[in-house]
Length: 136
Image (cartoon, rainbow, N blue to C red; front, side, top):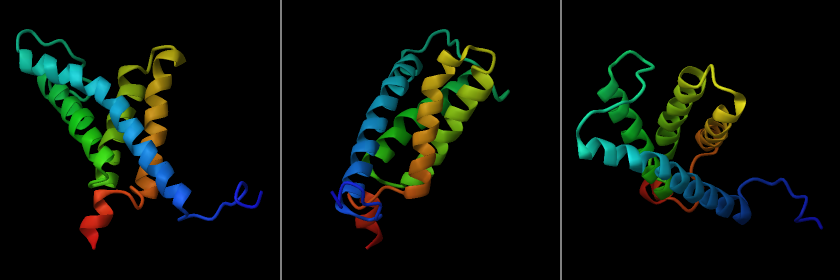
């Protein structure tokens, strides 16, 4: 019963939970980035929002790079806080600019991703990550 209500950070369960979170959120975000990567590689006419005023193609490239490379970095636990920051920024743009006028149901998934990336920015990657092994 004591373990069930323990709030001690740094326990084995905390590190395993961070690993599961990183692998899960990274894999799920890849399902958003991979189609964008295929769209870029296919060439042709590109239709994509330009929320920051940098152009359609640069916006797609930035979102794709963040969603694909950032997700892989998060899953590996490599430069996790930096990758989580870039993914959080992408989600803020998606939620608060691109989908600002949409109903909450269109923003909800982006908000969930944003919250997870904020948690990863605060906690870091945990014990089972390349960040830890490379810092030794």
